[in-house]
View 1: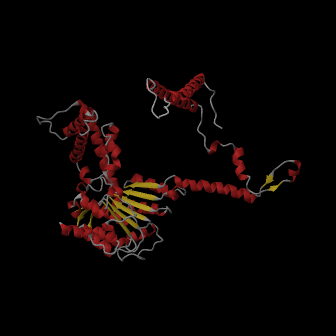
View 2: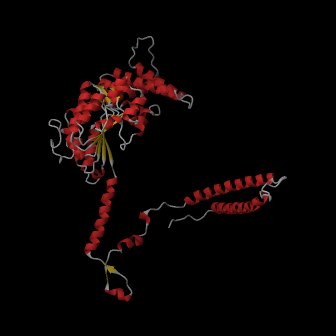
Length: 491
């Protein structure tokens, strides 16, 4: 039972006040019908009977409000003395009753009034093994979703998880974020500065849109101060517009240190990408997780770091974190062409090696084996990346013959057309389920939003239970035609 603190005099006073209010309420409810009684013909009594009725109703509402307030106060005061309890607080005597249901043999002494049972070693062992089994099963709840970044630190964490015999069994889904530290930004302090000054100016424009609802003048002044401090690093001291304020120094030191760390992180990342260490470590780790159902390969987006992006002016620590964020895959204009090609190659190779019991070439097209290892995965999702038509065709060949459900979400097509991609997917459709959500690039950028939703469905309310026109075409539904080809003809 809960352990209650001794009632204080305050609590006793509250109960006394509540009793008094309850009595007044009972009295008012008994008197109220007399004031609002009807005449025989159904009309209310004339004269001044209406005013007393309204006064009585108002008085009753006031008493009910006071009653509710007193009850809430009493509840809050009472809970101060109650300790939250759970199953671990049950006394041993009650828990032991659970195990007495195991059938045992009575002792001889039972004839003397001692109701005792003796249990075999097998029964005792079974009970203890069941308890241990419950412990192991509940351990699967420790980590069900695993996120992996292309960093040495992330590799170490994944390896530790994969080597833990209990934690690894609970992982059901893995998300791999293909975000890179851009060589373009790392090549010079000026390039790094130009990019982040631009990001701060975007934040100022966002804040200016909030002037009507909140006081953000202080944040805007701070943002302008930081921009001036960083811009001063790239100005010539002989420039007549050159200014150097003592307030600039902390932000300039922070900026230089962040750039130096960014360069180091980028070098470490490129090393593990080029020598294959990242691919080997991730594939080997995932292969030790027996209950993996889904793999999500994501290029990242601005919303992945929304807390940092919205908080860069709150503290210098968050500002530093923003300077050290890797580049999202969609920002390929700031990613080296070789880096982009390497990332696309890694995406097709990542599922290779997962569930090695799926033999290479068993169901796949010759020369396109890598993703055939994903046969044991239930779902493969690829999102937020810039792709080409040949790469998407290679993806189709790689998964041909498998029963994996493939979702392509927020992909931006850099070359080729989506109409041709749909045709290729339809021609190579076998056991796969394809879902396309909010594609961009090529002809999709020319369609009105209503037409795009008509073809691909509404990205905010998509359901795998119903297929869009594009997905019905890929799945070879009867009488289905390429909706993009039709849309082009209409235009």
